Amino acid sequence: MRCPGYSRASPAARQRGVALAIVLWFIAGMSLLVAGIVAQARVDTHMAQLHVARAKAVAAGDGAIQLMMVDLMNAQGEAGTMPVGNYRLGDIDVSVVMVPASGLIDLNSAPAEVLSALFLLAAGLGEEEARLLAQGVVEARSAGPGQGGMKFDAIEDLLRVPGTSRALLDSVRDFIVVSESGQGGTDWSQAPEELLQVLARANPALADSVRLRRGSAAASYPRPAGGAGAMASAYRADAIVRYGDKTWLRRRWVAIGTDTSTALPWHMTRTEPPRVLAKNNYLAGGPVDT
Image (cartoon, rainbow, N blue to C red):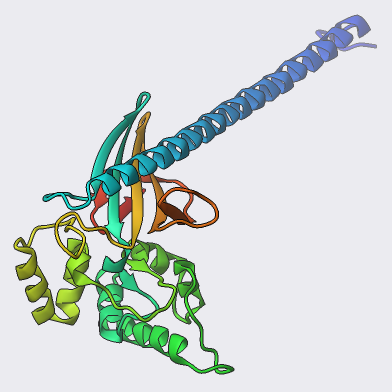
């Protein structure tokens, strides 16, 4: 006997309820799938645009550096020549800054006091930490065969010195260079103004003397040594490429003289991957990354 008010859905009604639930679950699953596909498509589109921008930055930067080298070679001996050029390649604006390599701090020859000042000012280390790290660099390159001695062949070799890190390398990479012989010191007359701040910490008298010889304490891009318009033997070429809403840095190292790879009177000795820079944050000593 059924209780008053009791009712039971028919089998057909129950089947319709189950079917409706299945349809709703299917719609929800398809919605999630479509949302995932759309999100992945957006990521793929962004990555494709980034690859296109990177490729254009490389092409425009490399082209502008070659044009800058032509202008620099043609301008030898001209008074007032400065190693900076502005170019427009298609719809892309590029500025090229030529920093004489001899005006940077050479890891293979820089004295401990200069390295210590560099680590203190550029990397933000404490005085004692900077001093110990500088001493570590000097000891690493001066140790004899079989005693862990090393020659810096690339600026990344700094990471082989105990106490260094990727963050420290990134903070000083725009101020350092490695020479092939390791015999020559920094030519402070060709150093960017930011590096003179390092010299002022290590040797104030020498920094004042260099600034007096330049004739202006604010000069960020001095003429190459040897007279107005004279060529340095090697440069760091920084191409600042403005494309879209980003500013890219394309950096190449150039040596004056021919080699087997080119008939031009200069050749590239090192090429670095392009990087995105913070807008309006390029300094004479190097860029500031985002």
